[in-house]
Image (tube, rainbow, N blue to C red; front, side):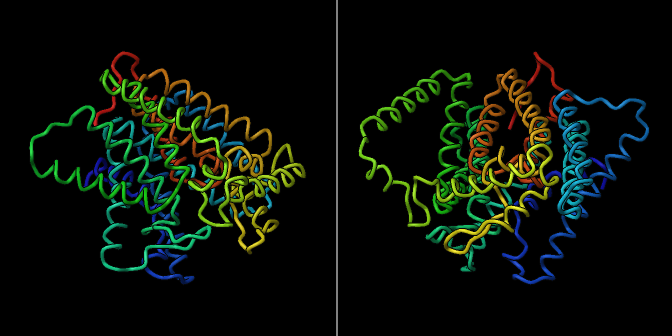
Length: 400
């Protein structure tokens, strides 16, 4: 197997393993959890090793501005070992983040933009398909979350599976806009089946955040599409939603569309406002530097429990979680990179890149995504940052 195939496999494995919960398949035991940790650690270290091998003969290492700002953030995160409340968590976070940057940069240089994105989404597609296959076998692929039974597949939870389905749907629709034809063949049948599986995952994970994020992302996708009739459909969709919000002025009727149980009521965003309140209290105790990279979540978990006995290591908001981890200084570096990335994504005028960025931007309001330990969403955004290593203003495109 040559180095290019290894990189392809690593890119696909990265997106898969960041979503895959070993305990769903092998059982909830300490041994399985250790296997999961070791597997991820091996993947991260292998990526760093391959990156070092790739650049060792290079006389000059080039970093785009997007990656440079992300690299500065990583350095600050590494320095936080000095004041971290959990050195182990911080070291794990740094290794995973470094591994992700290594494989993304390596993939863009070695494979190019299109192949890197393609193999990332092959891993995502594998998660969706394998989850559906497990469902068909009759195995337990559901969890009882926030007062309702929800589809989780082989992932860590309903939101994880739903985000994977949502971003994959955006990718597939972008591909259909550019390459779709009505010739009946095996590929068409497979594509129809995949879309069915994706929509099934989105519906039965019951993730409202993803539904909203996909809807808004598709508007941007259609808006920046070269197909004028899609632009018209997007405008019709916007008009319909605004009209519906104006017509539905009865709060109780609107709430009934979203509320599943007493644990998931709308006014507190399923309890997130309580988490944010506690996060703010903890942030105020260490506002400048936080509690250390990938350590803030542990502090939150040890200091917050809901009235029904549930605790969380996520602040459920990217800004709050980054402030917990690295305080005002670290959060400034993180969000400076994020804003800079959004500017360059917009400059490409590529519907898919803009839509996929919007998707994770929306999720940032209710989940940590870019803050804390490496997440599936952050890995994708690191990949987006890496494309500007080979970005050409007048020759840029992403094909599916």
